[in-house]
Image 1: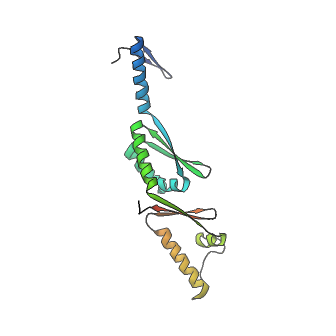
Image 2: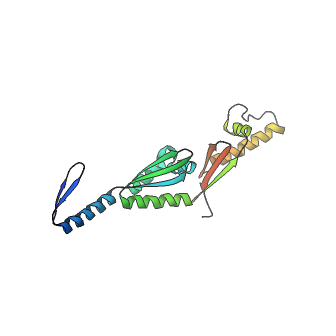
Image 3: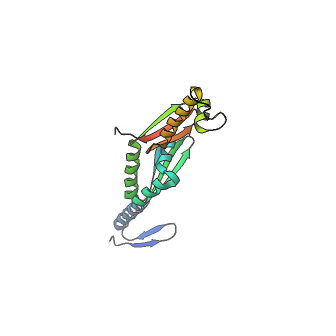
Length: 173
């Protein structure tokens, strides 16, 4: 198309021809390479990133298939970062889906004392509920409510130092 000779090796592409034609061909090749391979990093709350990935990676695999991209959740200390790779157009489409997911979620942190965490998540001193009525009955009711929250569809509960993180779809958005 540009009337140049193009020779490609493993590490370089050589263009031979008139200067203007070679320059135009170089721009076309660079654009094609850029469109064919793009990479984007998206910062995301680590807990929200884990919800985005889904159980066993199911949600992320579906998005990879739908957008023809590769997505990886990287952990940077206590923060998360999604790495999206693929053709530029596909990466842009995937980014829109990621943004849509993030905007549609609410993340709430609930601070809890250590003994309460132990009772809710098991371990020494976990709620067993002894006897009828009184303290045992109250503990059973709290534990039952906690199970209801954990079992709610569309709500993810993650344990975090000093409390829990509740993540779910924001019905107001």
